[in-house]
Length: 116
Image (cartoon, rainbow, N blue to C red; front, side, top):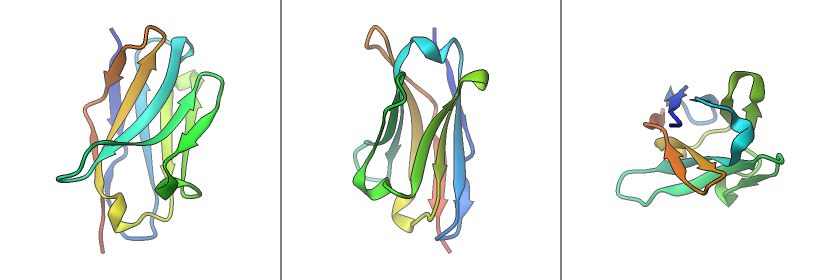
């Protein structure tokens, strides 16, 4: 059973930065992809960033140039570095793992609020 624990959310002013972490039980090597989703109030959950086992990355257009996803294999952790944050980035951010058997695992979510 895979367990994901997120941390790093909080309140930040526009233009600020946050670093989200997702600690996963088990080895990340066996996963197809690690992803970050977000869900703002009254909106659908959207994929923000993805990194595959081969290291390929993908970002939603609104995050390109501002967010960076990476994996710390030593710590079994997926990181989302978010810079130049905007109010529209406000959402609950969820870590997701796509396993080799295509099963999805989710973290509990962490709130990110960008406001002055």
